[in-house]
Amino acid sequence: MTIQQYLTKINTLYITGNAREHSYRGDLQNLIMAILPDVLVTNEPARVDCGAPDYVLTRKEVPIGYIEAKDIGVDLKDKKLKEQFDRYKSGLTNLIFTDYLDFHFYKDGEFITKIAIASLKFPSFGGVPAGRGGSIFFNTKTTRPIYKKTTYLF
Image (cartoon, rainbow, N blue to C red; front, top):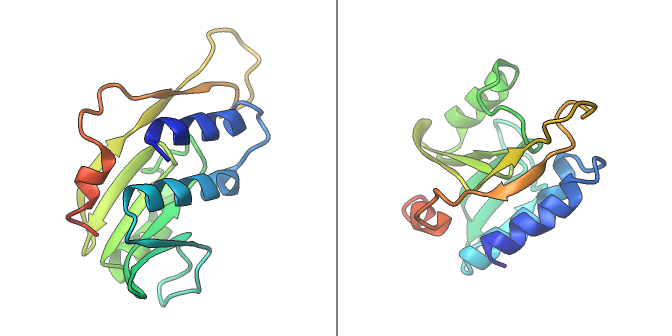
């Protein structure tokens, strides 16, 4: 699966207005496994000491990273997420927070980088429910593929 195929799939779900955070999980799992073929991505893995991240990434049965996903468009810097994110940053060595479009990478609790592979565009007319009604657009300003950034983390 390419990033463009991934974005097409999640946009198809997003524009219905019915999809939520869990709706996109299989697509993200497939994208990561396509980009990192030697890594197994498990959705809804067993709990760990600091909580229950949405994904664990393993190589040869050894956990090498975790992902916590929020719904598309959720502000990953929202103060409502701080307690959970701080707990995960302190308990997990390789961690990604994502809203399926923006990816924030942490190593040993420290922010490393972020990549936006797409953005939301909303129509200019009214009547759009909060957080719904827009479309996902590929971020043409992303000059480096996501896998270039993740290889040193995983």
